[in-house]
Image (spheres, rainbow, N blue to C red):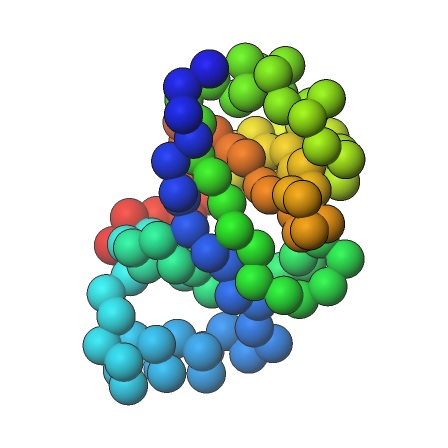
Amino acid sequence: MTTPQFALAVRYVRDMPAARRFYVDVLGLKPQREHASFIQFAHFALASDAPLGDDRAAELCWLVDDIDAAWGQLQTQGRVRMPLTDLPFGRIFSIDDADGHPCYVMQWAAARPSTPT
């Protein structure tokens, strides 16, 4: 397995158009990819769909090149919060860190539902 690289933090929002106005128009961030329920910036994203975890706290995601190898190596290294799962944006799993916070490990799908901007 290659060393995971930081992918992004996801902030869950209730009103995507209002959140987009704030982060794009007020803060001046430039979107890299957009979908009706997701906007990705550099290492930061907004999402208005259901969170992966059990609350709406920010989620830290780590990117790997081989999700199967990462799953094979890491699934016994911490409490599995979410088993390896296929989602529209890619494959992802989560194990808890030493303080019980979820650590999401993912591999992007070749074809994602969001489009580059």
